[in-house]
Image 1 (cartoon, rainbow, N blue to C red):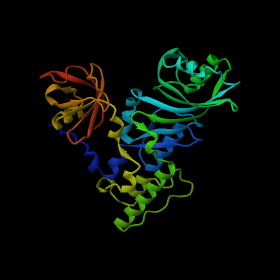
Image 2: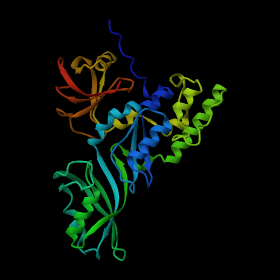
Image 3: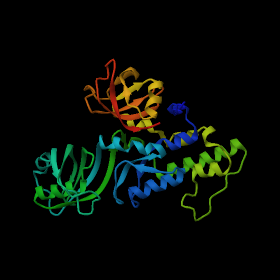
Image 4: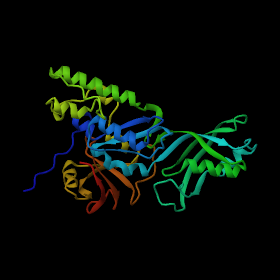
Amino acid sequence: MTESPRLRESPDNRSLADICNFGVVNLDKPVGPSAHQVSAWVRDLIGVERAAHAGTLDPKVTGCLPILLGEATRLAPVFLEGIKEYLAVLEFHGPPPSDLSMIIETFEGTIYQKPPRKSAVSRRLRKRTIETLDILEVDSDAQQALLHIRCESGTYIRKLCHDLGLAAGTGAHMGDLRRTGTTPFSDTNLISTADLTDAVVFTLEEIARANQTQINDAPDDSTAAYSLLHKINTANIDPNSTSPTDHLRNVISPAERALQHLPTVIIAPSAAAEVAMGAPVYAPGVIEFDSAAGNTHDITDSALVSCHTPDETAVCLGRVSGPLDAESGEVISLERVLV
């Protein structure tokens, strides 16, 4: 007889190991490193096997860069469904035109873009949606405009700025760029690299005191001077039976936070155990369902949904394949199993 898999504890009751291996950091990316380099640094600092970032940012770009830790890297597809927000400086190559507002308005809605030559994707023409494009400030002397942009994931802001310059008749390029949001994260509660490092150091100190042991410093040439899980393991402290400190909870959120913008389906623990073995969600396992916060339309066929147990533990990502209020049959096909 096959043993049922152990489901993850609820977000409020997770151990140090679980919060690190199924967590997300809403990081404020600094100028300098690439998004990939920042992700690798967070991975080594926490001591997990892998980490992934939610949307590439160039080295000079700052702002909202959610980092998925450990098994939470399976959630990466959810960021393809959301909206990105930016503050961008548009650098004109001549005096800004007097009808700039009218020109800007023509770029709202569906636009066509071909990725830049240096991009990592195929340079095929594709459609993207610009939800809003607002001028916050214009400095005619400096030949600059500050823009607020809400757009579909995968929009190239550098290319958008180039095209705006062509439409303005002056030519233009992108200056400073800061990402202020990537659904469901925003810049209202970003975690700096210093905040994250401090939280790890304070956590190690508190755990050392609680266990009356010494957690030694790493060698100076270590890529992660305070690798949290590695140091705890080498000190013979079990991270699976150690609670995360308040310091750590303030910087690492349960991975479920990355699912807040998706419609939610609550399924029974017995159904969750079946999902963990690779089975889809069948109608009898559905307890209740609701659209995402602020999303008033019904959950449509093929919509991406997140399935949770009643204690709010994420179980899987799936696509609606049948009426969620049906009495029998498959209702959600699996995209990613999260337990």
